[in-house]
Each structure stands twice: as C-alpha cells, then as structure tokens.
Image (cartoon, rainbow, N blue to C red; front, side):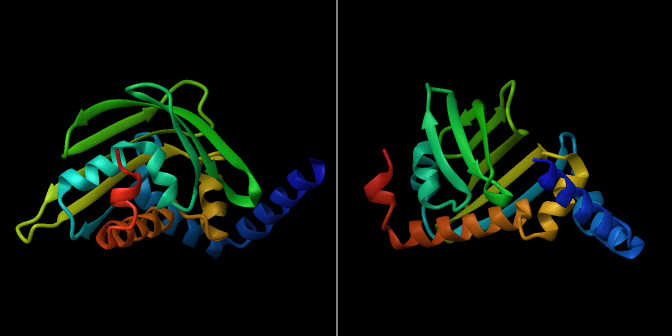
Length: 188
C-alpha cells in the first residue's frame, strides 16, 4: 500500500515538478472540461439505425457491457435502479448504484449515481432522428473523478481519458448496431 502511494506521489511530483507539463495537462484535460460535478464530457455519433432500436438496446443496461469495453457488468435492480461495475486504471474496479431520473422512450435516458458511489456522476443519452433515417446518439456526462482534477489529469496522461473511452465505446456501439449482430440477440 505504501509503495503504491509512493509511486503515485512520485509520478505526481515528476509530472507536476515540470511547470510546462502541469500547464499543458491543466489546459488540455481540466479547464476546458469543467462541469457542475467536476469533469464534463459531451460527445455524439451518428448511427444508421432508428432511435427506437437504439433506445431499446441501451435501455436494457445489461446489454451495455457487450459494446462498452470499460464496463465489467451492469445489473438491473428495479425499474429505475441499476448497479454498475467499471474497470479502472491499474486493475482497479469502481462500483455504484444509479437511478434513472428522466426516461422518454425512444428519445432520452438520464441518470445519476446514488449515495456512496465510487464515482459521483450524472449523465444522459439522447437519440435524435436524422433526415436520412439514422440517429444521432448524444452522450453527456458530468463526474467527480477519484482523486479530483489531479486524478483525472493522471488518468488521462496514462490513456484513461473518459471522453476517449466514451468515443471508443460509441464507435463499438455503432458497429454492433449497424451490423445487427447484437441488436436482435440481446435487446429486450
């Protein structure tokens, strides 16, 4: 335990001991992503599928680990409650319970973590039809990362940037849904 704390402190001193690295990290990963809960991520992707089909797949949260590499598991605990387990940097796992705070079929799912979450957060996913018959899937997430801004900057430095993870997972979702491989097999 002390070795791990020492290693983290050493990395922190090494990174933040060089002023230009600190300023670059702060500018790139923190200042422009500040939200009500700390870090704010907004991203979207267009998928050649109907909003109804995409919503139906996503709303069954237990489907999401099939297309999101950072999710270890999601267990639905009731109509508006679910338990999430996420793979974190250095082999760690983060867990929380979430509740749906807004659900508009085929259009919107919004959630927030409940008390005692490893990561306090809130977010939404919107399904917006396009004129061409596809859907813009728009994800918004605000969260307080473990370790605060420093934890976020260090995670991003070592390849665990939340926006990049969400972008990668949305690309995986797009591929799976457009191919139809998971849409019929897993959705409810």
